[in-house]
Length: 150
Image: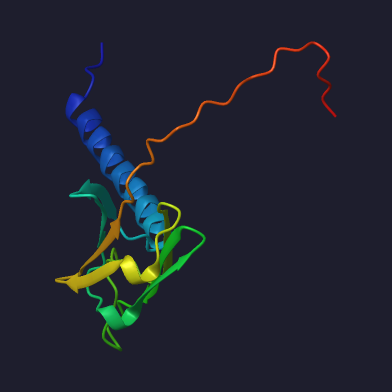
């Protein structure tokens, strides 16, 4: 009866694991390179203001624009993360490119009411939250069966 060589089997499984890990790693790297830059954002209320904190690492305020149209704030810009010329890329994880993020705000907010500041790669936007109108008036619903809808 021949004896089974467990060491050889273990070596083959280890090699298969390493090959599989390398293959999956290359797939993940390829996928991450094709992703576009989307800045991470936190949004919360504080003292009757809506606050947006947007991470824009490696950028400054001259690379970013903020617009307000139809109760929609849009933050856009372009991030460049060029490597030194002549360098050989071994791994590239930092994302670059154009971006645009839009956020709904309350109707009636004017651009002159919005404050924005940029510090240490974080853009802070403060938008006033108008007081809620508590003077709701009830609407009577007709129950007349003669009412027609056209």
